[in-house]
Every structure is written in C-alpha cells, then in structure tokens.
Length: 389
Image 1 (cartoon, rainbow, N blue to C red):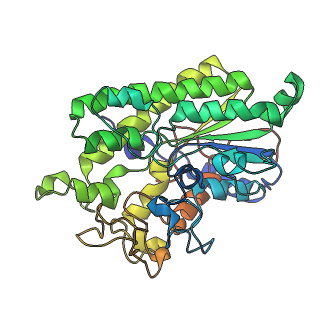
Image 2 (image 1 turned 90 degrees about the vertical axis):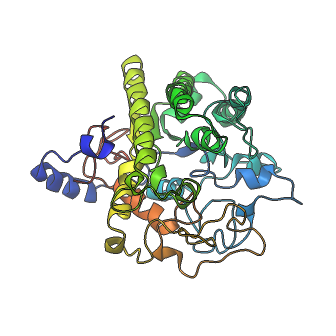
C-alpha cells in the first residue's frame, strides 16, 4: 500500500511562491451563497445533542466542550470551532446551523445553509453492520438518512427547477468526512482486519452514491474530505496499546492504523476520479485532511502545541490521558487548562487550534482551483498534490 505522504509532493517551488502570492490577493467573500454539511463528529455542529432526550444528553453537551470560542457547549466535539465553521467564516457565511435544531424552530431559515452531520454517523446503514454483529449505539443517522433530510427541505429553499438550479449552483457542499464510525465500531466489535478491509470499497461507493445524488439534484461544487490519521488519536492509541514497539513509528503513532487510514483515503480518491468522468461539469474537490493534519503531529512544538500531539487535552489517566469509561464532559467533567497547547482534544477529535491550522492549509494552500468566478478560490489542492513537502 502506497503511503499518502509519499505520493503527495510539491512539484515546483517557483509555482509555490507564485500561487501563495496569487491566493493572498484574492477575496473569497461572496463566492457562495450557502453551505451544506454532511458527516460525522468532525462536522456536527449540534445535531446529536438535539436528537438525544433532554434528560439524557450525550457527553459533548457538557463543559468543557465549547469553552474556547463559544464559552458553552454547542454539541460540537471540540473546545471550539470545527473545519466547517472556518470554511463558513472564510466565505463570509454564517456558521451553519444544525438541521435538527432548525427544523424544530417555528420558522427555520436554511437559505444560507444547514448542517446534517451527526456525531457517530457511518457512511453505510446500521442494518449492514448489525447483520455482521457490529453495533453503533450512538446514532442511526447514516449518510443515507442525512441525504434524505436534505431532499426533504429542498422544496422550501427553492420553488422551481430554474430557481433550484441557480440556488444549488451557488452553494458549497461539504460531504464528510465519513468512515471513522464505519471502521471504529468495527474495530471495537473485534471484527477481523480482513472483514474491515472489505468495508472500505463499500464505504467509498456509499460516499460516491451520495455525490451522484447531490449532483443530479443540481449541486456543482462538492468538497469531499479524507479521514484524519487514526493512528495518532489518543482513543485508538489507548485501545490498541501494546508493548510491541514495532507497531509504532518514531513519533509514537500506530503504523498499521495510519496505513489503514491511507488506504481508505486512496480508495475514496479513486471513487472521486470515476465520478469526475461521469460529471465533468461538476467540481469535486478532495480535501486532504490527512496531510493537512500531519505537520501538526510531526512537529507539534513548531505550531505551538507544547503539550504534544498524542495526549488528549480533556481526559484522564493512562499514557494518553484517555479513559473510555470517563469521557470528556461526563460528570464530574474533566477539564483542560489550555486547549491551544494540544492537538488532541478528547481522544477522538482535535482542538480548535488544530482545526484552525488545518483549515488555513486547506483554504489558503498553494495549489488552488478557481471556480464560480475569478475571485473565488477552491478549498484544497487536487489529489496529486500536498501542501507540505
């Protein structure tokens, strides 16, 4: 299996300098009129906390979640903003409201966008996994469910084929990331690696099917993130902790788990290439979350993460400050004195500081693709490039 980091390289330093100058002079505000999000806990801005009963909220509904930016829990799995929030700010849009909260309002207004992502959401339906003895106790709101929600509200956003075409052409769609819950629950259910590997092309096809449906509805600009490196996350490092030193690289991450993540990302990119051939009029952008995160793990001190990259900020006990029996936010809640000094927030998600730096590399990277108009730049490089040498 080829390494993602070895496959992606900067190809020309002069082009790099020129494009940095080019992107720095562009104003992205006004490129898109709305932003629609789909995904899991890396993108959910409050759906799961609105799905759960008010008398039994999930752990991300408690402090210190949200402490850095919002100063109260919003349902985001971080101390502050997520990548979708930074994307909205970059394009001059309001932060994207969670669908479940909005639909319960008396007069929901989704014309600037809405977020369908749900913590714990898989790409494949739960029935697929339950037939194999793999259970997700967090949510049953898979990618297919989120897509159905979008279809249900679309008539309220535009009232004719021409108005819908215009509306969707000026909208940006963030589809993912997906996969973390498909594989995470499978790992924790002790499924074999061969079986989990067999899920990867099915997950990629599910993502591809959703893209095709959105394009058929009228979407033309879609950003599809890859997964972040699972082998660095404190939750997985704790669960798969071993005395076998050969399973770790020099920086302490699980080699095999990162290779698995790379494999997923490569299969997704192949799926995107096939869809691009089917829909040449659409702009389908692969958001390289994996390589955008890697510099933070390789050189945490350089980016101000003086507490390191593999120890959770909000947690307790063990080598990685993570205990699945006492998650961040569970009472008595566990605090974190300064999240900006950490990459890892709670064992499975990153801090606002980490997401901010990732977003900057994704939004202002050296290899950009203009679309919609000459002052609108794309979010990420084409798949064959990385922002880091």
